[in-house]
Image (cartoon, rainbow, N blue to C red; front, side, top):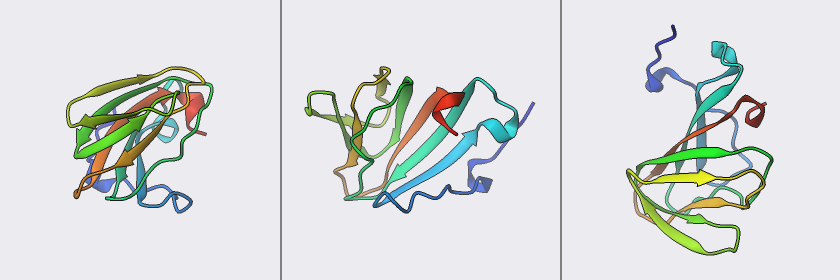
Length: 114
């Protein structure tokens, strides 16, 4: 068993994405060969890329207010407590539209985090 405190987990390099911070809560380094738990914090005005890839996402909004952009480019307001399922190859992106950090917990298969 592994027990961690999120405050002790370092941030990954996300310098290519404005205002986005990422932590790998549990993953390969912990011996997880099937699933990865990630935590993203998007600062006000920040956004993840609008992108797609061949794996599913299970997402829970942890804090703040944001937008998830669907495969048709439609923006959906989301807030703390809401859940999002992103299918394989479904185009998606997240944006912070609030004045406070917007954070999501994201679970993907191990192949989704190399």
